[in-house]
Each structure stands twice: as C-alpha cells, then as structure tokens.
Amino acid sequence: MSKSLTSRIVLFEPDADQLKSALADRPVSPDLVEFLKTLLKRKKWARKINIPSDHDDVAAVLVFTTQLKEGGLEIFSELHVFCAGRTMVEKWQVVGEGERISLLPKEAFRAIDISKVRVEGAQVNVEFSVPIVGGQSRTLIKTFDFSQEDTGPRVVPHPLLEVGSFDGELRAPTSAIGS
Image (cartoon, rainbow, N blue to C red; front, side):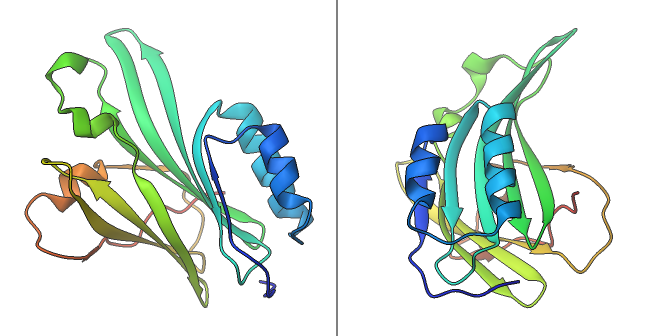
C-alpha cells in the first residue's frame, strides 16, 4: 500500500465527470482509478466515494443495487472497499424479495454516511453514521481484513439492524472478503 500526503476525496452521488475532476489533482494508483471507473459503469446508483487522505490505493464506495426476482424486487446497499489491488464487498439487504416496501421504516432508505476510512496494516476500517429513529445517527465501524483469503461478497444484516439498542460507537465484526 502506498502512502501519500494528499487531501481526502469525498464524492456524493458521483458520476464519471465528477470522478475525473476529483482525481485530476490527486495521485492515485492506476488500479484504484480502474476500480472506481468500473464501479461507476456497473453500479449506476453509487451514493458515496471516500478516498482517505493518506493512501493512494484505498477507497470505500457505498452503492444501491436492485435485483428483480420471482417474488418481487430486492434492494441492497453495498459497501465496496478497495485496498492495494483487492476488493471486498459487503451487501446489506434493505428490502427482501417478498417484503412490502411501504411497511419498512423510512430510515431504511436514508443514506448511510461514510465518515472515515482508515488503514491499519492489512485492515481497512470504514466508519460511518447510521440513521436511527428520531432523526439522530450512531457511529458504526466495519473492519475489512485484507490478509484473509477471498470468499466473495457477503450478505449481512443491514447496519440499522446492528445498531438496535447500543448506546455509543459499535465495532462490527470483521466484514466480507471479496475479489
């Protein structure tokens, strides 16, 4: 992993032009550029890209995806984490195949905001705020361990289900292993 002394990049609902403009004055690895461009082409609903200030080959990207199934539409939030040429993906189910969208709390569709991305050795910690009932938010940290073997994307409970009744910051268990 290469370290650099550059500014952090945060893009909300990015498109290819915004990405190009943001990367124009920021050195990043060619692999990271390719990852971001490919993700924006394949995942049309990218919500946020966060590239930390002290690395040129690390990023976290939050996207919405849908899949039409026989029983109805499934909606997922996906957290894609890129580090030194590898990608890990964690999928959070927002709406299941047979669920009625109207019965879900509106917080399930509010943006989860990535606030920090930190690298500690082979681990990338993604800190984000999760909306809770009453308009407030809580902090959740997902840890992606890039020293482990690849197992593909992993579907886990939505972070709203993880924050349930905790009173402060919550560190979630080690997340998904990807490509």
